[in-house]
Length: 351
Ligand SMILES: [Zn+2]
Image (tube, rainbow, N blue to C red):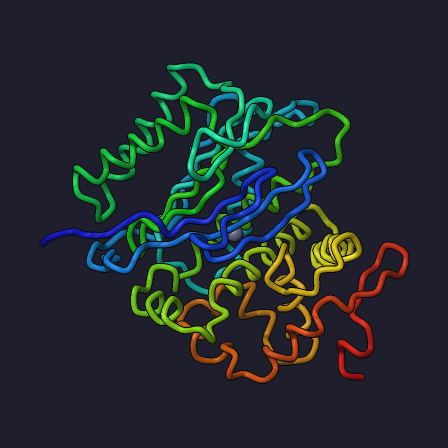
């Protein structure tokens, strides 16, 4: 059987660069304490690409944590250990209602920021990986690719692409839909900056990307076509907003803080700085979804267990035909600060 498929349904973070809205769905600003501002965006398969559903896989998540990340868990290390990252992944997996994809999560460290160019989607950083480390990572990816729907030639093309990222210092931060049920997450980030309050950012980042791999609708070609063909769709934005929500929530659970409050705080601060009332900017759909939840227009559990993305509901229930969605777009920014707590105003809540 001919295996088609492919790539470009990916999602990633980009540092210090404004997303190109003409070619990408949308972008979302995230503030990370240790490296300024990221812009997060999604891009996707073109119309002629077909996502194959025929290859059976064993659902699960494998982690290849490489290079400068070690297996011991000394809190003084400037790297995240494998055991710790596995805990984040296990948390994400445990929250899902069902999980139908075979996911490979590949993480590695890059050095200091070098430039904004060098890659279509990523910035260039110093390379920390040695040649043998790169070969080891690629070998593991190559083995995993053999279990996907990709043809041998397609696998080679992907390896070539990933080699470029690894050898040339890409700050890769994407979830790729290789096949409807074969997903790969590439996550490169800087080593910890001693003293910086970044302990909550990387867990939120990894669980965010992992959540994209759990969004089953991203592997549904029919749903993708509907999303891309409808001017009243909010699908791309909800895909991203839910990942923002999930990442912050899960990181909060892992590290014992209120992740939703932290997310609202970031959005509040962004809005105070920009005054931009467009829900399409930055992390704003995370607040939009939270307000939907608080007004009982959306079940939080459907985000947290991934079921919001099982039956293409973004294109049936949450388009602009839903008047509550339209209202949310005018209310999402009405967040009030009370000490360290952030909450929606009475007006936003309809009280
Ligand atoms: Zn994302």
